[in-house]
Image (cartoon, rainbow, N blue to C red; front, side):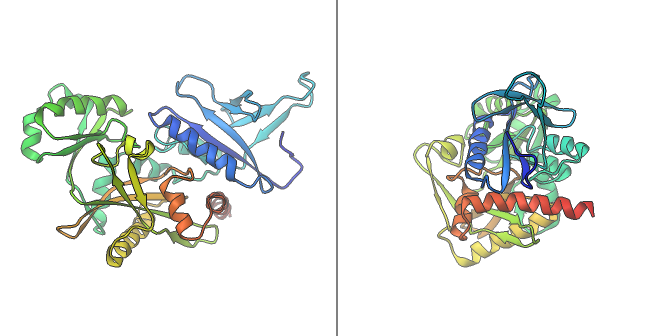
Amino acid sequence: MADTTSSKKNIAVVVGGYSGEYDVSISTGAAIYTNVDRSRYNLYKIVIPRDPKAAWYHLTDSSQEIPVDRNDFSVTLPSSSGSGENNQKIKFDLAYISIHGNPGENGVLQGYFDMLGLPYTSCGFYASSLTANKGHCNPVVRSFGVVAVAKSRLLHRTQVSSFDADALLREFELPVFVKPASGGSSVATTKVKSREQVVQAVEDAMREDGNGQVLVEEFIAGREFDCGVIRDAAGKLHVFPITEVIPHGDSEYFDYNAKYNGSSSKVTPAEVEEEVSDRIKDVSAQLYDLLDCRGVVRFDYRYDTDKKQLYFLEVNTIPGQTPESMVPQQARAAGISIAELYHMVIEGALAAAAAASR
């Protein structure tokens, strides 16, 4: 039970969600819950179950499930007597959103918390909803003129019944990537190498995407790099050393298996020419501000080694934050421990909220 007489902030670590990234979110939340300094903050695990109709709950250290009052995002802890007297209502000072995908990375939770006036750790509603949909984000990033963006086409649910695979392949050379427009962790993403794969790949991606939108994207040969960025409580922008992702075995790209089942190497700092590294970090810093990002964000790129051309792939506004994840690796390479990284996220969000309320 939290000590409400203390000056410690009450932090809700929000995990779970409705997407195929549920288990990834649980792992991220567990890492945050384990590593954040309890002498500085009171932490509460808040679980949003896979079923959108299920009740949200606070999971106690003794595995008790206590319902969340979604009218004000509060939790009432029962008294030790169980009589109902002296129950303790916990209201939160900050939500640490660690849900990948829906509803934590697409603006849904952000809009809910905005309506309640509760600060949170991620990008705001608009930036979250824009960047969550690759088909919508790509044209915006292209319009900034700071980095190339791969050619792509957005398909809507209404177009699938009359989908013409041959027409698509006249527009794109194989291989192409077919992915949910709003998906993450490469769930339901297919590298299509033949006409026979196209329709099934589109159907798989459509089932995963909550909005019924699929992105068909040209394949960019070359190397994959990622770069984490965060703004601290003092307003300083930290651009971390970049990571190169090198898939192994049957993984031809950074798919779900490569991400979470050890079928890839992540080299941080990346062993690449300083000019390329500096270019990636410079673009990432620019995009962070141009897209109005907040909290810790990861930008993913492909680098065509033949053309010496950098291509933007996507923005991850709720990147993985387990010790093995890329952003914590990058932070360590910059001399920042994982606990310090979490504290930067928390203090940065609290400082931004305080500044906005002045």
